Image (cartoon, helix red, strand yellow):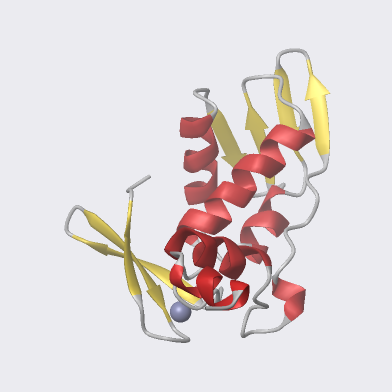
Length: 143
Ligand SMILES: [Zn+2]
């Protein structure tokens, strides 16, 4: 078995590969998450381009806000008029990018084929990530 084949049989490595290398079906422009524009004010952190980031993630800003709120264990308020998110904690751009990556990995990218042509479906209490490209369904943790 060649090294390449061995990677294919290692499920974790396969997921990792799909996450890092496989371009999305809908075009590479959708792949990158915009760099968060951060303003720190007192004990708050404002993400100025939060709406743009959420649009790129193809998810409701309120949902992405709830995810960050939970992960950072803080309060977050999204302003639909300005498109900004205010977090009640001082946090670096690097940390925010880490969690946005995590969101993309868990709630946007198809673990089977790597496409980001996906949608979240709520079935009762269960959440499922449904891939439009390959049809795979992946149960995810509700936010
Ligand atoms: Zn897929």
